[in-house]
Length: 286
Image 1: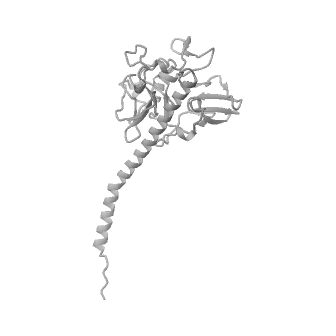
Image 2 (image 1 turned 45 degrees about the horizontal axis):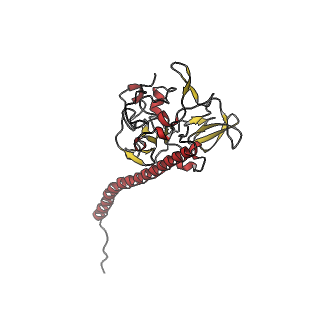
Image 3 (image 1 turned 45 degrees about the vertical axis):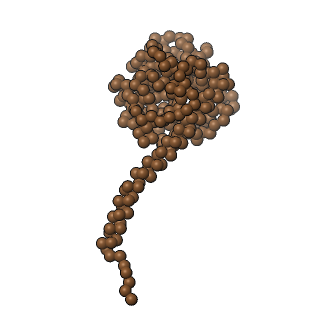
């Protein structure tokens, strides 16, 4: 009785075929995995936009402030401790070397911290309180036009560093000011060369950007990390993916973007409240 066995040549051919098939399938598997992450990211962003509209319903159409309490501190009503109140997290200071996070201004009516983690982002948060980084990161909120870098000092007031003007109003926008909510970005995939920032900035100075420089503007850019695409949610509640990465042509800003970050538009068209001519913006001060 003769037994049939593989020859060495047949075994090598089989291994070669398996290697070729693996090299073909692995990129497809990676693409499918990133597509799933991108879909989860879009779902997160839609929920952010819904939360923004819910907040506005409760507060006379006012959008949530991007942040307050950073300089002087405010008292957290839940813990009674000094806190930084941001759209994404309320960071409660504990002593001089620790901090505790809970869902922020936008999510006080309910929202899990995990919702605020982009599934494709695992980099530096670029945001610390008492040396403690945000527990989740990767998303940013339109601070240039909607939220504003606000401080409750004598009302919604902050200082314009270039002219030291006081009493410059910087309260959050109201929904009735948004002329085209389906085309005004509210949230997105935050990212620039060195990590991610929670405050989305327009490429040119917006009406609530009087306290930033060009590096800060670049830090508020969008990351194109979902198969070279970026996701954004709009004021009307929908979210969509974008494949065109816009840069400003300004070397001081573009140098901080890196190869995988940019803006949603070359000017402020994707961020501003009024789709008509916007005379308010200029290049951010150096």
